[in-house]
Amino acid sequence: MARSLKKGPYWHESLLKKVGALNTRNEKRVVKLVAREYRDPDFVGHTFAVHNGNKFIPVYVTENMVGHKLGEFSPTRLFRGHSGKAVDKKASGVPVSSSPPKPAGR
Image (cartoon, rainbow, N blue to C red):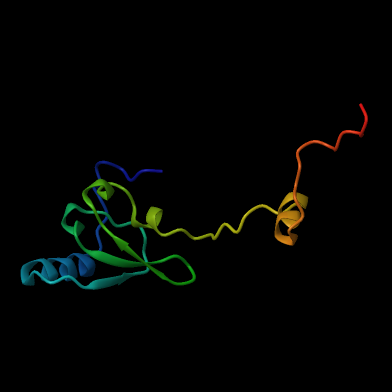
């Protein structure tokens, strides 16, 4: 759900001060964030360490990311693949065929 237009965007003042100070000094440092909802045009070119619930994932902000939340770029779940017979056979080295073998002589 989007934030109300009359309220305006939500910004954390301490984060804006940190990024503003980095911009005035022309310094590029990684800034740690636990909150994942920030996005601002001033953030372009900076790297943020965004917390995904387990660890901090570095996210480099480009122009295309403005308007998106930083949490979209730090995945929270690790996909390890689907399980099943075909995956088990590939792992054991047995060839997997899509159709049963045809009887000989026909």
